[in-house]
Image (cartoon, rainbow, N blue to C red):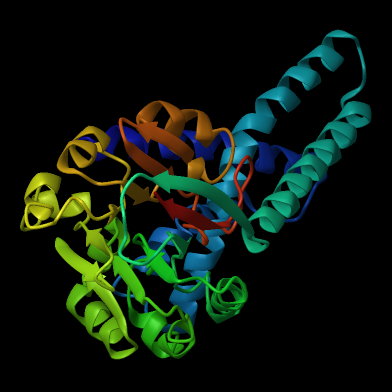
Length: 370
């Protein structure tokens, strides 16, 4: 039932956008019937859902899913731009400016701004940066005095984020020569099919760190429904997916990996305190938890560093204003009692490969033990 008002709002928004398109076509006397126009527009609006349906497989379904992904960004930007265009048109009408004078200016200006937003957003999505955080942990880690950790969350490997972007990740990570690599969830976009079909594991296996690579599940791995196959594929290339598991690395520090919050309604997951119950808390503990919730519980359980993703920092503006209110920390760094918290905006993207007020990133941690 909760889905109904969301669907109704989605339809109303697109009737508003589609109405502007129909008006422009009629103004310029484009020879297309209204019925054909609205059918084609409806296919565009619902192309993402159509492409994900079980009845449409193969290249056509994948193409529709990609088109629909981009349309999500176009739709949100137009929701912001079209009211401004309507207001400008209304003012021009009140001032007595002929429609055939102001309409082209407003139409082309709106299209130009939309294009600039899409191009800039695409640059932010496909050109990842490295963000570095310096962390001090007041514990001994065996003979280690310093640990360099690279974190890549929310890669979203699928039909849009593919081997080209993945190769970029491998190259950038390996150039930084990390001691440890951590992947805090949503390595897959949802279905494992593109990951298998494009043999992406052959690229992922080139991520190299002497102390290993560890991952946890994100909500999208649960959505895809191929968790066991995914864990098997990752294990075959030497990457351990931690599902409420604790690992002592090099007899120096722990890596703890929680199941995603989605598991609370799909079989359950351990609370942080139970997960760390067997740990020697005189050693440092690095915890992975895909969704940035329950900071206080992780800190109380004894985690020294908590690494999360999930939010994408809203991915494109103004969504970051929403994620900022939804999460205690939606991006960046904070100190929770004695625990360091880092939430990454992610390396890949969900839906359109567009980012505004957000960048695709790799997180580098320089951890010093004292």
